[in-house]
Image (tube, rainbow, N blue to C red):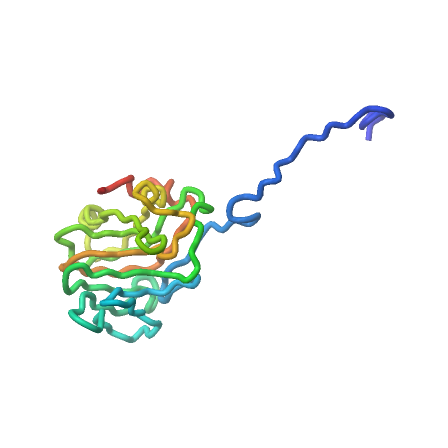
Length: 218
């Protein structure tokens, strides 16, 4: 070091105070939460709500299901290829109010994902006649959803498209983003037939120029 560098004898030091706050999400905050691709990811599984219970789809990629199994089936579900073999779930609505949910026993703190969006790849086969609700859940009696029907109708059929729904939009509609246990909720009435895969919550995706505006519908 050059002569005179540093403190002289008797000179007090006043070091700058550094922040002791830990970044939200920890020192190595995650940028992505997997939900579904081929099977459930990061502890999530797909369910169809039925009378008094939630029925799991399971991981049998060859199964063709009509759920719920009690009462009138609302959804016909099967596995198909979108990007790779058996990577997608195809859902055909048979009745009114059919719902599909990705749920995990452990809730996620999505507030740690900066500018996050729910991202998924979709292919539409039969367009809807009414609203198609996509959203998230945050415990009993806690959810927020938006109508993606207009987005589905704007694009071409039989082509895979990427949908990005900002988490901030759902927070404006009442989602408690710090405790999300169902990061994927899909509800609609027949007719509707679509396939989806690569479902995830991704930091930064809300800044994408093709991210959905907030809100689409209240």
